[in-house]
Length: 281
Image 1 (cartoon, rainbow, N blue to C red):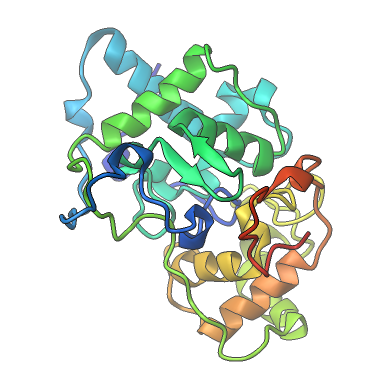
Image 2 (image 1 turned 180 degrees about the vertical axis):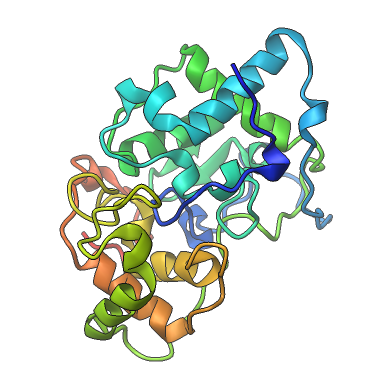
């Protein structure tokens, strides 16, 4: 299995849907650290490719990387659309502006308001496969699920346990005025269609943003504020922060006004309340 140098890779990407807003976690602290509040602000730092260990452990980490970057090939039985993990977790989880994997394993197990229970990192990965990849969960005993966990744990190894990670999730922006999907369609054609296609169905350069091959209504990205915040900091690719807050909201409203797959388990979400007002169901 070949390892592409993590420090040199640029995953052509974009909007896919496996991001999380800070409110999704409902402010809950990691279940393993509830007794002691965090006091340390961690610095964003990830290990170099040269630090991947040898032997079986290293092979597991490398497989996890391949599953993230080449999801369609390495996890085909569990994917139901044309997205990959790296469409959202840009640069295979290294980009601090797009729900980076760095430090993520330090936060789990964690209570999530959407499911109303404490979930493990493996559970969270499978949520992404179901909601964002419109697929099905990888069996808990699968070596592939263990490999993704191992990859994230390796990326997190230099982050102190219990520390605050300012880069976790995505930084939310506010809409200066109500989103305008009509203006969003104009912004989309001018700034997004070259990569995603005028019909939003994706190209060789970028994934589909709506239709049967895109993320489901149960994805975090189906929420306009979440999509807008991701767009603001990451789009157009390699030129994040190029759109105004209003344009980011408008194009997010346009994209999320288009048809996309349903998520059949959505009726079980937020069983204890706390459902955000912008959830589209």
